[in-house]
Amino acid sequence: MNIWISSNIKGKNHFAVHAAAGLLGIVFTAVILIAFGSIVTIHCSESKETILLLLCLTVTALVIFLGLRLGWHLQCYAVVFFKNNDGQLFVTDVRQSVHYGRGLTGYIAASEAVQRKLDMLLQYVKTSSQPPHTAFEIISVKKLTEHSRHYTLVCHIRRGNTEKRETYRFDKHTENAQSLIYLLESKTQSCIP
Image (tube, rainbow, N blue to C red; front, side):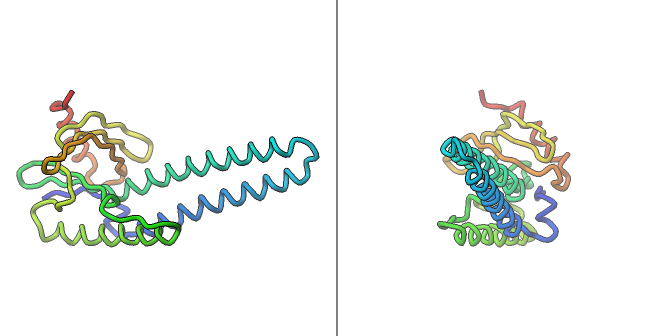
């Protein structure tokens, strides 16, 4: 069985550290902006309401944007592709098999659980010739887009009676990425309209 996983995970797995550092970076950036905006507001004599509104909107938009970017970045680490001996191509996003708790501690605990599951998945692959039960078979590829640091894959997947369209992001530094790209592009011809 062939496996494609981010090279950042294959060596030393630091998924939880990346997740926690990213979240703390977002919080730190928001706090710095709020502090700066508060100082500006204190020193301005007019239109304090307008400045506070702009500050609130800016910080909210920035936190949402950075949160989305962090999620996309972490998905690149958590997506794993498999090709079994029958030539079928499978994909799994390990994050979807973990329950996320509430608050910062729940997020960090879930990130640690994802890291443990990735480690267990690598051990499982060494001994098994079949993909894990959490993997979906890739039926067809709708779109494969190259970006500066990752690829975006829109595909139709199936597991049992469940069939759906899903979007995945995977790291450009995935080992043997070109062979995976070739397999995914070969699935484009059998695309479902």
